[in-house]
Amino acid sequence: MLRYLEGTVFEKNQDTIGLMVGGFGFLIQCSKKIMETAAIGEQRGIYTYLHISENGFSLFGFQDDEELEVFQMLVKVKGVGAKLAMSFMRFLDLQELTRAIAFSEVAFLTSVPGIGKKTAERICFELKQKMLKRGESHPNLAVDVQIGTSVTEALISLGFSPVEATRAIRKALEKTENVKSEEELLQAALKEMQIHKTYVE
Image (cartoon, rainbow, N blue to C red):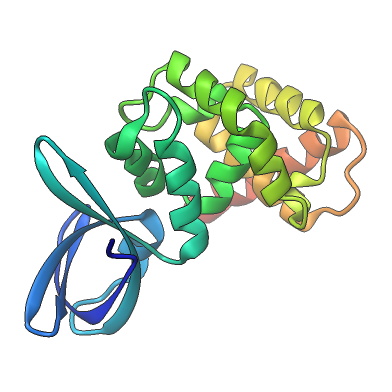
């Protein structure tokens, strides 16, 4: 199994990059992190997952072994498979995905193209505890799950999209220590919303 490749980026498309390794060119479907940072001509290493199906071979690429591990967790969930698992990795960064599953943020997960409510619920049910365990050392997962869920719902009711709400909460948790109530987290998240709005304008 191909677990890691290192070579020169010779091509970059919307969702894939071409990596030249020892005279062989590999076309790799890559995670959000790699697509944001890869540059043509650079030398880089990519953690890989080779998927074999009746339709042929597909090669998926990840920033590090943590991304690869989460991808493999998703693939094992019934009804997901490699294609849908890669949709998560391509649309969300690892921290967003870990937190969304840990907090059972179904609305946020269904914002990923091709992901329906039942699939998102199944992923949360099967992987919630694993993601909470992975995130024990991260401040943005230390807050009580119910607080995060309630604040997400409150922001959505105010007209923000699930993606906007979840990302604002994540940023607020990264900047704010010892959040103990829904009110504190909501205020911090709204502040992040205002900062983003001001920056965009």
